[in-house]
Picture 1 (cartoon, one colour):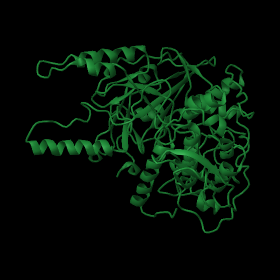
Picture 2 (cartoon, rainbow, N blue to C red; picture 1 turned 90 degrees about the horizontal axis):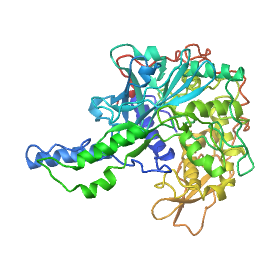
Picture 3 (cartoon, rainbow, N blue to C red; picture 1 turned 90 degrees about the vertical axis):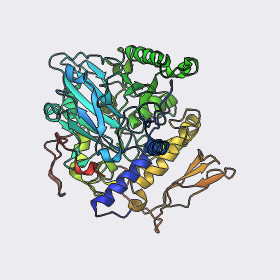
Picture 4 (cartoon, one colour; picture 1 turned 180 degrees about the horizontal axis):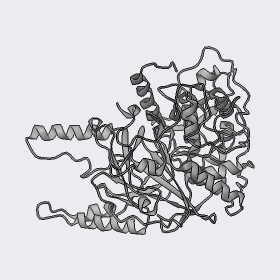
Length: 548
């Protein structure tokens, strides 16, 4: 795509990428429970009924517009001392970065933000914990569980977001961002859906425990296709922005109450539903019809590569993720971004999908930035960008679409994947169709068409409802073939193709096995870019890139 020089134009491009990401990421159709797929109804977005009929109608139209186009930019207020047990147990509060764009509500799945923590003690014992997010001014449906953080432990925190730009801000009472060593991006350019606090220190502590053999990372095992089970750094798993977002789940109800995903949270939401169903002296209603659905808490989750891997791909391929006890979920074992990255660092063989400099989350005003890429990599235990093909967008695209371990594996495993449920039934009826659509969009979102001088190699077949029912992968540089002659529609979702059909990208050996741990955010390697070293999120004001 042609690059825009103006800040405003680059932000428009970023918003469009965010909208495309919403389809290419999980849309939260998760296994094992209902999900909030649309804006939550009820008191959260209800228009007030006071005033004249025309006023009510206008307010209703305004509320409907907010539901159709929710504010894509939200801010999380980070509690004091976020790395302590008390800080972890204190809810983060969600507000609009720019109130003029509309409110932000955690119960709205299109705006939900998520927090995920990992705790490792001095003996190598690893647990996870999901701090709660609620609206500013709201109260949690149930008191959050206070985690155990043994003396000497190291805590890392990661953030995910279901819309465009998430900004971290201090709660106001103290500089919680400095206390948590939080990184939101590079100076005035936020990552977007991702942020972290104290992640480099956590990974250093974990890697030290691995070296002492106190912490053992399980082997990957062999998938049903005879290949090693995939990781978050496998080219068959990644898309345009890998290793992003988290695996956190919250519980929500139709009135906007939020709780941690545990027995106490479910009980509190059921109790609140029963109370609201009784009516009041002014508005009496029959609770029977509502109680069948209102008493069932909704599962609120973050669409992420991590969730795609551990809850969809792993079961389809007969693999098991690296898990640890979740202190916020009654001690049940669960996966987490930190665990996925530890597993990938220990087990992934070449080619290794490290964050490239054309990842939309690492761009600064539409231009690539070594400093911002290194800041992102430091948060997911990846080495800083080195010389050669490391970080090169064309090399990344080539490995993704040429290497047998990349998208080719998805098509090789079609017989397995068509039997697996789709993360997004609104995109495709099965996992294969979803992954094919995701690959098709990734080619365009990474600019692979321009970098490789080739058309999108993934051709999608859709039915009358627009669902992806089949797909074909054509070798780069060759003419696309129809996925299925009998299908009702067949087209590539990426319309832009280069005039030259000959690929000129480097070979697919995108990244060799890392030999060093990612450098700390505060001391990135020197680069030729104009950006300075990454800095923490602002203490009191959102970065300029989060403004409309």
